[in-house]
Image (cartoon, rainbow, N blue to C red; front, side, top):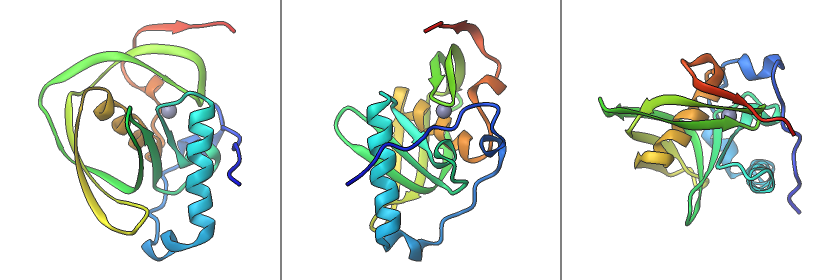
Length: 158
Ligand code: ZN
């Protein structure tokens, strides 16, 4: 059974560390599969569109992303191409509770990564998906959206 993991929030230093690359051999273990399932369950429960491993306390290069139609598990993701065109849109982060703001991101990206079957994949993304992938990869480098030039930062009290 997958379980809901505790989300780490600022100012926890784990969020500021650079994550380690995942040894591809370890992808095929039940422990790793369980971690992926737990992360997806946590993301869905918290209504997130993406979750990076540092957010649940692990400094490893793993992110999960939810699209309208499917879930992406991205291991050792790397952006290989970025559009010159950028756009502003609103972002929030489960690790920075109750804050939202507009951030400029590349409109289109190409990203290479390994999937759960140790297979190398390449995805071309734009719009929201490109934004989410950029946001989650930032987490692997210890970067949060509030480090960027945020426009119209809003605090929503709960
Ligand atoms: Zn985030």
